[in-house]
Structures are given as C-alpha cells and as structure tokens.
Length: 387
Image (cartoon, rainbow, N blue to C red; front, side):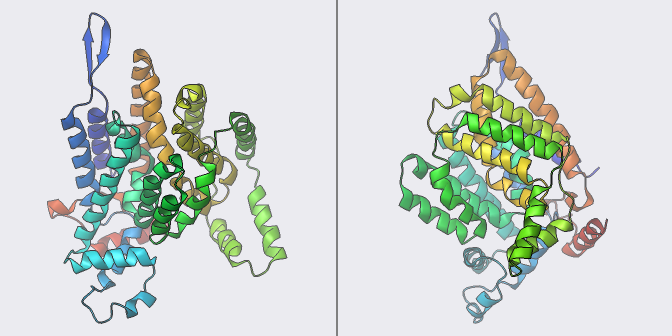
C-alpha cells in the first residue's frame, strides 16, 4: 500500500492542526493552538518533503539538471547557460546552492525549507491564529504537486504571495518587481501581472453565479467548445505554434469531466464561500482570495477538456483555499466546527489515499539511508507511463 506513509503524515498533521477541545459545564471549549503544535506541524512537513527520496516523475529531470549544473568556480559556468533547460533565475539559484557544496538532497532540502519559511510568514500575516490549519490545507491542496514536482512553479507562486500585500497598499512597482523575480523562476508568473488589477476588485457575486451555473452545464454535459475553438484557430493561423502544441498534448490525454470527489468538493466549497461571503468581505483583504477562488473554480468548469490547462493553471490560484477555509472555520459556531473537522478528515483521508497509492509515489526518506536509487525509480516511472 503505497499511500500508507502519506496517510500517516496526514493523520499527524490533522491531530496537531486542529485546536484542542475541552468539555466543561458550558459545553465544548476550543483552546488556542499551542506552540508545540505549530513546531510539530512545520518540522514534520519539512522532514517529510525535504528529505524525500526520488519520488514521482519530474525528479529525474531535476536530478539530471542539478548533476550537470556547474558551480561559480567552473570555467564552463557561463557557457552552460545556453544549455540550461530552465529559467535563468532558477539556474543561478541552483548554481549558488551547488557552489556551497550541496548535493542533490541538500538542494532538495533547502528548496523545501525556503518554501515553508515563506509560507509561515504568509500564514502569519493572513491567518495568524490558524497557521496549523493553513499548513494542513496546503498539504491537501497543493503540497503534493508543488513540493514533489512543481519545484520551479512554487517559487514563482511564493513571490506572488509575498506581493499580495502590495495589492492592498496599491504599490504597483513593488508588486511588479516581486513577480518579475518570480518570472525568472517560472514563466507562469506572467499570469500574475494582470492579477494586480483583477484580484483587488470587489467580487461580483451575481456575475459569478451566472458563470458558475453556465460552467456547470458545460462541465456536466461535456461540451467541448475549447477544442473546437482551437481547431478553428489552427486552421485560420497555420503558424500558431502554441495552440498547435496545446492541441497535440491535449489529444494525448483524457479530459477531466464527470461527477468526481474533486467536483463535489469544489462545489461544496463554493457554496460554503457563498454562505459566508458577507462576513468574509467585511475584511477588504479577503477580496483578493475570494476573487482567486472564483478564478480557480471557473478554470476547472470551463477548461476541463484541456488537460494541460487543468494540470497547471489552477495551481496558481489554489492558495485561496489555504486562507479562506481557515477564515470560515473561525466564523463557524462550535458545533459546526466539529462538522467541518469531520468533513475535512474524511475528505482528506480519501484524497490522500486515492492520490498517493501509486508505485511512482512510493515513499522513502534519505535520512533512513534505505532509499531506492534514481535508476530504480526511473524504471518505475517508465512502467507507470506505459500503462
């Protein structure tokens, strides 16, 4: 059962992320999270992801890349830039770490450590009393992708998260600077540039309801309007390379239609945010996260036929979960908090088990000194891709 280590870490995070509950004469009393709970959550996540073995598919590309990367002291340092397959910022970042004498696992650990330090500061700013719950939601909504495969994407996203405060203060220059730095780690950061103007707008509930209902009709009836649109664009503009690549890649994959666990969860979360909209919007800063959530949901509903879009773009806005759900949890009555916790537990258990029960995600840890080699993992990846 490949999912067992992931279930164990989920259970540990769950136990330490939920406020302690005592029962007295007045009923249930929710105590404040203790420091040891936050330390345990952070330490567990950093060890679990930072010292993981050669897990999943993208690790092979990053391992080969880091093995070939020179240090600042090598003569071919400049010439290798032309061979560098990744963004220039990520290249210099990798060269710097290798120049410090770090091997691949050291590189991986520093990557993870930086991620969680920035996430801690982000949660401390927006959900200071619910940081543990924020980390649990990060684990369920994003960590598997960001910490294991999307190593460059998470860096560009973290630059964006650091720039959100400048949306609130209307400091466009600082916002642009941070996201341009993110662009040097992953070109997806270009999407965040116009978000400065979009995310700060007051969320339009009526418009979203119309788009949400229409999107559900398209999703449930499996209306492939985007594929048809791509075909038209390709015929009209034969040299439209990017559209042709999307079409070719998408034709080799299955679309993500149907009533799945993910669809039910997203619908339930949307309803929950609608119910608490008036209370959430009291804090103007929440507009950014509500708008990001709306974009996240609409991408799933309208673009599910495009596999390449669904696999990449929603991840850029999943951060809305990490902030909005803890804020909603704070607004719930004591009894409803218990229902929220129960639902989160059942959903989390189901999601972690279904996602991680694959040979390519077989977990091992560098600290145990009993991990499979990169060659063995490459063979497993080939078997997985051949299915």
